Length: 168
Image 1 (cartoon, rainbow, N blue to C red):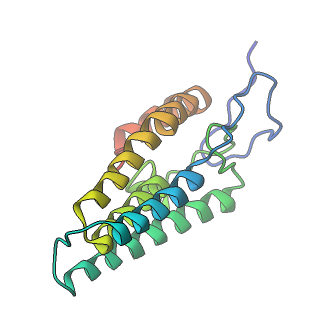
Image 2 (cartoon, rainbow, N blue to C red):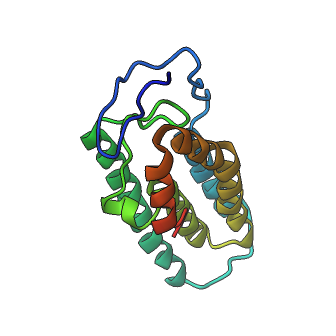
């Protein structure tokens, strides 16, 4: 007989089982910080500039939206008492707030921030960073996390996936 699954909005036993996957050593915030640094270096070391000032300052808008999405999503996890560490045991399925517009608002926020940073860097090469971050996060985390969520929350998670897109 299998253990009961946690349901939407409930908190289950938070002890990880022996067969629970171990979170990776490098987590999305590590990749994000490295990506921000890479974008800054590319902006400093390369040319030509794409747009005259003040147009690159438009990048501040997606940076602000991205920061807010990431912060709000992490706060919602904390409010529900579920684990924020990727690929670890989840105790609640969060489907309200920013999770109504994206199944991955924290990753989307990081991606928007990086797109804004690429705008500020104002060189074509800087756009390789958010594109690479997107591919890496999608393959290393999102796909695997979705499989774990489906296993943990079953039909509730599948219904959520039917209502809310992965990114936007």
